Structure formats: C-alpha cells, structure tokens
Amino acid sequence: MASEADNYALEEGLRLREKHGGETVVLSLGGEESAKVLRAGLAMGADRAIQVSDGRLRGAGEFVTAEALALAIQKDGGADLVLAGVQSDDLGTGATGVMLAEFLGWAHATVAIGVDANPGAKTVQVRRELEGGVIETVELPLPAVLTVQYGANQPRYASLKGIMAAKKKSFTVWSAEDLGLTEIEAHFDIKELAVPEKKSRVEILSGTPEETVTQLVEKLRKEAKVL
Image 1 (cartoon, rainbow, N blue to C red):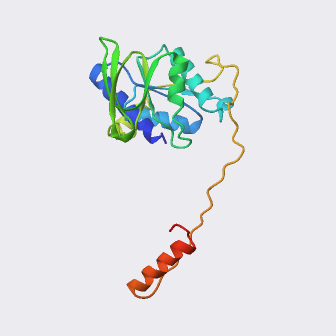
Image 2: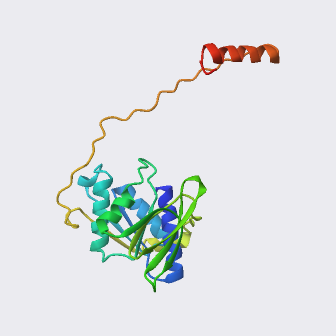
Image 3: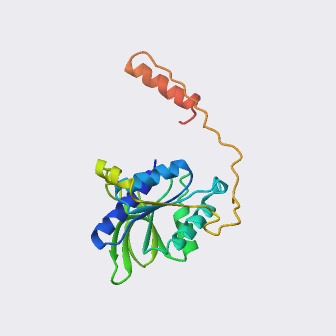
C-alpha cells in the first residue's frame, strides 16, 4: 500500500486538477508492490501511471531513487507541480522529495498543509507547518516540488466505478536503461537491523495507601535512582 503521506499528496493533486484542469499522473519506483500502489492511485482518480521498475534499483537509497524519478519526470515531458509525501512509512528520512527537487532544478517546499496554485502567474502559494504550531506561507515559481504533510486533507476512497475505470487507464513501465540511468550505486549499505529489546517488570505494592506510597518512594530512590 502507499505511504499514508503519499495519499495526502495524491489527494492534493486531484483537488488541484479539479480546480484548474490538466491531468494528475502517479509515479512510483519499485516492483509489484509499487504497481499495486499505482493502480490504487488510478482508482482514486489519477489519469495515468508511470512505474520505474528495475531490479538494479532495489535498495539503492533515496539519492538514486530521486535521480530515477527526476529522469522519469523529464522523459514524460516535465510537470507543473510535483507532490510527494513528506516521508515514507518505512525509513522516514523525508529526503527523497528534497533530492528530487535538486535533480530537477526546481523550487521546493516541505511539510505543506495547503496548496493554492495560480497557473496564470505560474506560481503556487504553500502553507507550511513548522515547529511549535507556526504556520508559514511561501510563494514559489512553477514548476516546483512540494512534500505534503500528514493530515493536510482528507484523502478520498476509491469507488467501484473508479476501480473499474483504472483498468482502462494508461500504465507505463520504464527501466533504468529507458531513463538513461547507467551508473547505479547505493550511497549507503545497511549492515544489520535489530529490534529494540523489551525490558519491563511489573511489581504490585500492597498495604494501605500510606504504606504503598512509602514503598514506592523507597523503590524510586534506591532501585530506579530517580529521586
């Protein structure tokens, strides 16, 4: 399934298309799971899909992923606006969208919670959620790349009609070679992943309220050493 943040980005793209026209294209890199994500995007209402699928790209990291996606966007003729989730559900680095903007050479803004496009002026106003609840509004020239924050909108569900229509929509698959990506090199290597060890102990104190409070204080002072 798609990253939760990606669903918010797709919903924002669909709303912009409904308001200003044009088309919404879903783009992803990966294998069969990626294809399922794209078909779900088509069912939600995207006009067509592009999948970058190549075994050599598996595990290459955010840098190569962003480069491949940028090449796919350029091969497809470019775009006015690229919307991505603020981060993935697995690694959660929040880096791919920013790297994508750099590869394209476009302006970008992160953690967007609202997008107002002005196609005539070729600009987009973006409301960003910063730390401490501060909301910042910035104006960027188009084309641009935005990463959309969790909860920015309410993603729609795919209807039965949308699911049936998705089967007839365009689905393009490109390899790394199709994109002219000949040198593929991971910029990091994951040596090992470990699940944090669970260490918990429960002790029930008995006695009167006064006695249990005394026991608790003693344990916090002598055993936990927090007092």
